[in-house]
Length: 246
Image (cartoon, rainbow, N blue to C red; front, side, top):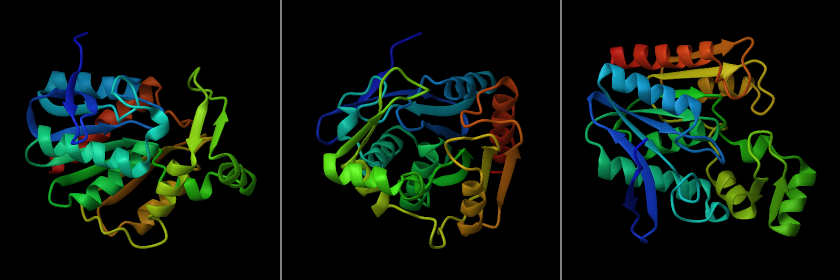
């Protein structure tokens, strides 16, 4: 595999990315929390884009993957700005955002910031507002007391870290309690065996979106990662279907 490319932010910190030129709207994959652009869903979608000649952009937020920076310095707002910086400087024309878990929250924030660029969205266990519904009162108290929480992660050898700065950024970017002014077509994939993000979150998101072209697809046996062969096949088919409509 070739090394990724890098683009410096205005502050000089370098963001890693892989950009594939091609036809149609550029597919932009947004990883989840503590994830990166080399995950199974991102690479499978990129392989499909290569086979079909589609344009695609994968990326690592600052402090994630091979991008420069410290993970603990990242916030929802700073990672949104990383995505905007890469889209603005590396792509032209419409983009299709594909967001996994926290990436599903970021895709909404990016779509709100660039309504003229975002032609469609595909969420994979999208997790908007998880700083609100995903933390107990005891955990919030620990954050206020210690400024951070570290817990074992089933997805990584590294501890699952949440900082007070990230939590505050999430609270400032909550979306679900008001209509979300996105008019592009949206597809929301969610496993009903998801132990991290309740599948009802996708139903609430679908109801909050202003767009009339919203479909929620529930996968009865799917878990949070939706990385089985049949799950990835469904993701690719969903991306293909929405691109064909654009």
